[in-house]
Length: 260
Image 1: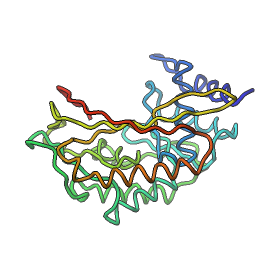
Image 2: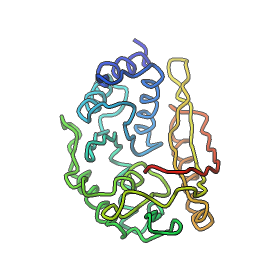
Image 3: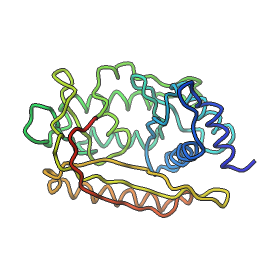
């Protein structure tokens, strides 16, 4: 059986739900992004293709691993019911950078603010969260049969945590003890999307590897961070041969509401 067909069969066997069965395109998209995580082009994949549980995503990963489609090192994190397929080596490095005052720029988007504002990573306990996640990933067993559950994740601002884990150059934070709304309504946002082509079995599938936004009001302040992030992405991309045709696109949008 060809590699593409094995990926699709694994997705349809493990990820189907009563609400939705993955289409061929969705199955290929998950496979392409999983390959990107395996090749360290991206540190993690937040699974949101349908309502599959963390255990189902874990079964899918284990089947792909047993079929030697991806390495045994990848693991599943369950953050308050949200499933992420993680490359531990890459994520550990990124989290260590946060603790050393590196990592993504943190943008406060609390509803009470007139405009988004850059803040220190200590805001919202992001450094503490990074340490908790780092400790969890350092102690994991790659042969584990169940997803790893971050026990305190129900207390965390997951929008900010996802930014940390998914390798974005910026991450949004807001004080969820006051409100889950934000100040991004009608705020011009520069949206960056990164696409690549996954080539397998003489066929190609184009997928979106990254998509994130930056308020234009702070763009000049973090432009150098964004350029450094692009260079790092290009370097990682050149070190593998599974994905081709890396493209980075940017556009400015203004939306009546932004859900984080």
